[in-house]
Image (cartoon, rainbow, N blue to C red):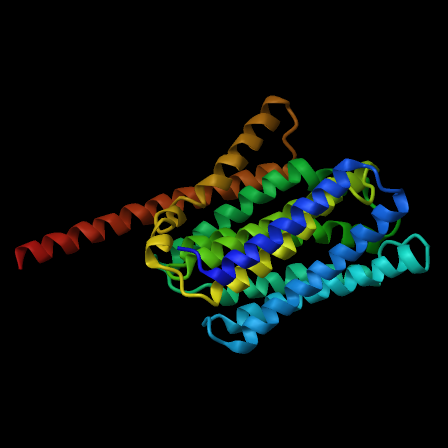
Length: 325
């Protein structure tokens, strides 16, 4: 049963997202109006989400105070970067250079979010080595998917300067790390799963929006008011909903629905990486990064299965000993 504050947060976030989406899709507003509304909403939603996470961390009732504090830093950092971007486009009316001070704030997000996810990881029922294998499986599979969709075009496009090239790669790579940690978080957490699932959804939305922006920018087709902008606002609001949800004790019946899911989560990106490998091999376009990623992926999945068999054998021996006793 979802509690009142969580319901109120979900309702508010849904209203904002639906209204924003209708505003963009309707296409009745002028280009300047879209520019102003889009920039201001991204700035406000990021800063508001950071404020909510900071309040939850300050009240300290969730047991994840340091994690929410790190999320507050991530959201506020992004919000400040967007505030500079908004000032450049709306007030100064100049094209924001790349890279710019705004990128400092934007890149704070993946770093602080990764720290937040690590701080929130608690309670797991598997061995540490198996957990590390799961993390490497997810990371290598997501790298292969990201390389085929985003990283390879960015790498091929290069940049005007070395700094611009490195910043361009930093966005998808940072999101890749965060999403990999999200899968590990869901597979390890055994209590408070609903807030962590909501937070994971927000971070995945952020990764998708960033990757979409990078891809469209590389192709030269991104414009303010694109559907990608809805993804950013959604990410910030969903993170705020997760923080609110974590302040209310969720019933164990709700959380129990997620208990078996974490065991199979690493297999989802593995399937995606395998599909990329097969498709690229069929096209005869297997690049060296994909070959290396595939080798790591299959090595880790083999080690993981060996560890699963070993754990099952130990479990069978334990049951047998108890039956004999």
